[in-house]
Amino acid sequence: MKRDNKSATAVAATFESQLGRLQESLKRLERGDLSLDESLSEYEQGLKMLKSCYSYLDEAERKIELMTNTEAGGAKLQPFHHESWEPRKTGPSSKS
Image (cartoon, rainbow, N blue to C red; front, side, top):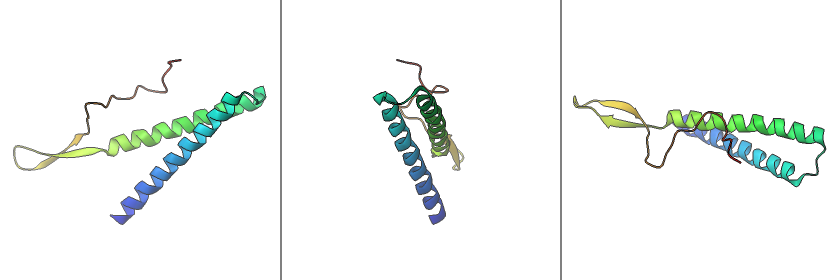
Protein backbone atom coordinates (compact mmCIF):
# COMPACT_ATOMS: atom_id res chain seq x y z
CA MET A 1 0.00 0.00 0.00
CA LYS A 2 2.88 2.38 0.69
CA ARG A 3 3.98 1.75 -2.85
CA ASP A 4 0.64 3.13 -4.12
CA ASN A 5 1.03 6.22 -1.94
CA LYS A 6 4.52 6.81 -3.30
CA SER A 7 3.21 6.32 -6.83
CA ALA A 8 0.32 8.73 -6.24
CA THR A 9 2.73 11.26 -4.74
CA ALA A 10 5.05 10.94 -7.73
CA VAL A 11 2.16 11.44 -10.15
CA ALA A 12 0.93 14.48 -8.21
CA ALA A 13 4.46 15.93 -8.18
CA THR A 14 4.78 15.32 -11.91
CA PHE A 15 1.39 16.91 -12.59
CA GLU A 16 2.24 19.92 -10.42
CA SER A 17 5.60 20.22 -12.16
CA GLN A 18 4.02 20.10 -15.61
CA LEU A 19 1.36 22.61 -14.61
CA GLY A 20 3.99 24.98 -13.21
CA ARG A 21 6.07 24.69 -16.38
CA LEU A 22 2.95 25.35 -18.46
CA GLN A 23 2.15 28.48 -16.45
CA GLU A 24 5.72 29.76 -16.88
CA SER A 25 5.53 29.10 -20.61
CA LEU A 26 2.29 31.06 -20.82
CA LYS A 27 3.88 34.00 -18.96
CA ARG A 28 6.79 34.04 -21.43
CA LEU A 29 4.37 34.07 -24.36
CA GLU A 30 2.20 36.79 -22.80
CA ARG A 31 5.21 39.08 -22.25
CA GLY A 32 5.55 39.30 -26.03
CA ASP A 33 9.32 39.72 -26.06
CA LEU A 34 10.11 36.43 -27.84
CA SER A 35 10.94 36.20 -31.51
CA LEU A 36 8.45 34.47 -33.79
CA ASP A 37 10.53 31.27 -33.84
CA GLU A 38 10.91 31.33 -30.04
CA SER A 39 7.17 31.95 -29.64
CA LEU A 40 6.29 29.04 -31.93
CA SER A 41 8.68 26.75 -30.08
CA GLU A 42 7.31 27.88 -26.70
CA TYR A 43 3.74 27.37 -27.95
CA GLU A 44 4.56 23.87 -29.20
CA GLN A 45 6.15 22.93 -25.86
CA GLY A 46 3.13 24.40 -24.06
CA LEU A 47 0.78 22.18 -26.07
CA LYS A 48 2.83 19.12 -25.13
CA MET A 49 2.70 20.08 -21.45
CA LEU A 50 -1.04 20.72 -21.67
CA LYS A 51 -1.58 17.30 -23.23
CA SER A 52 0.48 15.75 -20.44
CA CYS A 53 -1.61 17.56 -17.79
CA TYR A 54 -4.82 16.35 -19.41
CA SER A 55 -3.43 12.80 -19.41
CA TYR A 56 -2.68 13.02 -15.67
CA LEU A 57 -6.18 14.36 -14.99
CA ASP A 58 -7.82 11.68 -17.15
CA GLU A 59 -5.87 8.98 -15.31
CA ALA A 60 -6.90 10.43 -11.94
CA GLU A 61 -10.51 10.51 -13.08
CA ARG A 62 -10.39 6.81 -13.98
CA LYS A 63 -8.95 5.99 -10.55
CA ILE A 64 -11.68 7.80 -8.63
CA GLU A 65 -14.29 5.18 -8.01
CA LEU A 66 -16.68 4.59 -5.15
CA MET A 67 -17.57 1.30 -3.57
CA THR A 68 -21.31 0.80 -3.22
CA ASN A 69 -23.28 -2.05 -1.70
CA THR A 70 -25.36 -4.27 -3.95
CA GLU A 71 -28.69 -5.83 -3.00
CA ALA A 72 -26.93 -9.19 -2.63
CA GLY A 73 -24.64 -7.73 0.06
CA GLY A 74 -21.58 -7.53 -2.16
CA ALA A 75 -19.84 -4.45 -3.43
CA LYS A 76 -19.41 -3.03 -6.90
CA LEU A 77 -17.29 -0.28 -8.34
CA GLN A 78 -19.15 2.80 -9.47
CA PRO A 79 -17.72 5.79 -11.32
CA PHE A 80 -17.35 8.92 -9.24
CA HIS A 81 -19.95 11.61 -9.94
CA HIS A 82 -20.35 14.88 -8.11
CA GLU A 83 -23.04 17.48 -8.71
CA SER A 84 -20.45 20.17 -9.53
CA TRP A 85 -18.41 17.90 -11.80
CA GLU A 86 -18.88 18.10 -15.54
CA PRO A 87 -17.00 15.81 -17.93
CA ARG A 88 -14.22 17.56 -19.82
CA LYS A 89 -14.74 18.01 -23.53
CA THR A 90 -11.94 16.56 -25.64
CA GLY A 91 -9.07 18.99 -25.90
CA PRO A 92 -8.79 22.49 -24.46
CA SER A 93 -11.69 24.92 -24.62
CA SER A 94 -11.85 27.16 -27.64
CA LYS A 95 -13.34 30.08 -25.68
CA SER A 96 -11.53 33.41 -26.04
